[in-house]
Length: 358
Figure (cartoon, rainbow, N blue to C red):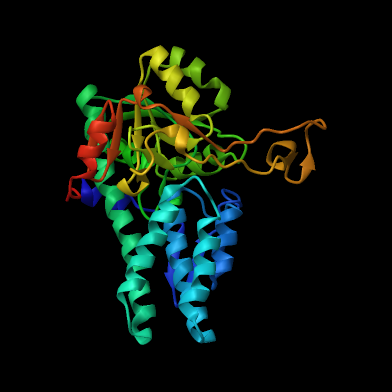
């Protein structure tokens, strides 16, 4: 299966080349494929904030390379460059507050930096760490894809209908995808009859990204309005809802794109299973439960306007871009360390004590 998955890789969102971080501008997909070059920490932080790159693992990877670019500029400027670099750490950390992978990647870069005492070795060490973060995410994607596919088969062997929300594919990671990685593996194993992709308001990641990725892989996919999900659960014999995550707390609560929580409630009502797929870097054991997760709220214009044109009345806007799904609504959390079924604090702690699966 691993070789089949590697052969199926077609899309990537991040490329490090000739000392420049290139990001596929996801705001323009699927109409245009435009790669933007970034050569400073400030530029990378802005790209993360502006949704050029999105998806928790991809944000973390981009931030790692952003810190490398910051170190390069601070070293060239001379003086107390390590103190000056703290400004870049702060700018990158503040670019998106909910996805824990961002701070996890920056902390890895900080730890690597602290071990290097010779200034002449700093950039090579930080580049190796950033590339390692990218490569390890790709490997984690492949492991999770296999584990999730086997979980689907364990409960029902044969073609099934699946539903997903937002985009947790290659565009959101350093490789094959988390939730879409599982779906891709299931498709290769003959376990997918059809995938229903929520459009995912207000940025339409399901419409623009998920449907585009799946169609490009030849996976049967149907796009639906977010509000149609419960109706489809009732009428279309869907077996699994499969989503990614931006942060998972110590008790197994999951923060993901707004709308995930209501999917989990509806899935339980209709007897569907609910799977969350995310690398262990998404698990934040410092937070006890989902109520502790900072929830990003973005500019109200994302709801009031469409392509810069006003489409709504002059009203107040509430625009949280994540919600929290309680652990008791989740059937399984799939990570590269293994699978936790019916997650709780004890099971999550046991998972995090394991070494990575190979």
